[in-house]
Length: 351
View 1 (tube, rainbow, N blue to C red):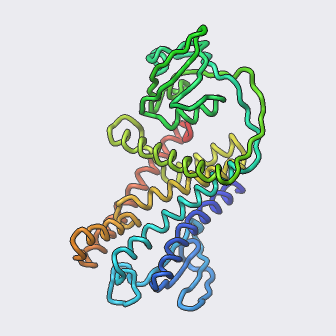
View 2: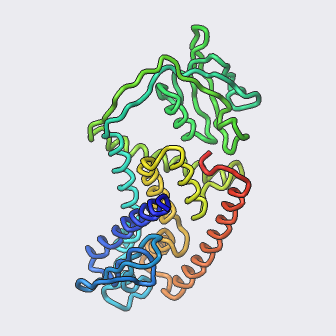
View 3: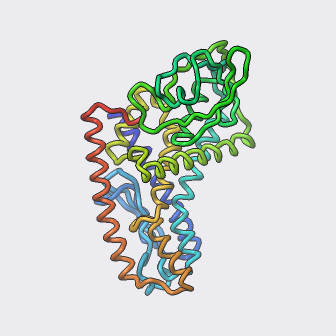
């Protein structure tokens, strides 16, 4: 029960921050905001301040902002009546806020003093017919560099491998006093127990060091972490479309199960970096050009701009969003079915 409450609180915070982006930009451009809701109806409590009603609702799965005339430009203060560039900013501001939150979380984690175990990373075992075997790696090799980065821990190398799934990755090792360079291609969906490259690693000459980055170094690292998540997501999507990788996303069932696995392994504190990952995922998902989402509405604004200001009739746009919403619900149901079958088969959502 505590875990469920923690997860619900996390989801609500992420979505409310997303909606706060829409709320603030709408207010800045003089768009009438009818309601700012935390949770989804039915309404439990509400208070009206000015022209906006602020509500607490019964279904704790996020939040919403109800803007005047999202598809109807007849009201002078409606969203649809505003110039394309203002509508584009309002629509994109939710994903922008989620990206900013993720950067702030990652940067904050870098600034907090932490103990880090570092040492020399060696290849302990190489699985036959694996990417590592194909690259010529052997047990006893010391990994010096991977993807241009100096390797100082097993977890560091694991993170680099995760960022390069489905891609070629340059690796430099030391073997018998010689320095050798090769290319490894970490794979999607490896056989159970083998990992993306097919190696077992060990750390020697381990030492513990305390690290804490100043904010002028932590903030660029926060940007870099978000960029890494975007890159991994893009690789996952393109590999999935090409048939080289499994479905790269989960529905509500998979998110709950995967989060529970992460918390079971690392404790409740892992919810902090997980919040950053989920925030980036929420930003990406909402900005995709899918009807009924922010990105789908933004696509219509872009089409209007390309057509020299000639907009698609609001009733036709509304119909597209309605159909898109129905298809989105159908997709969530299919993905949830796949998530449930994974649970029944005993498969992990984080490996």
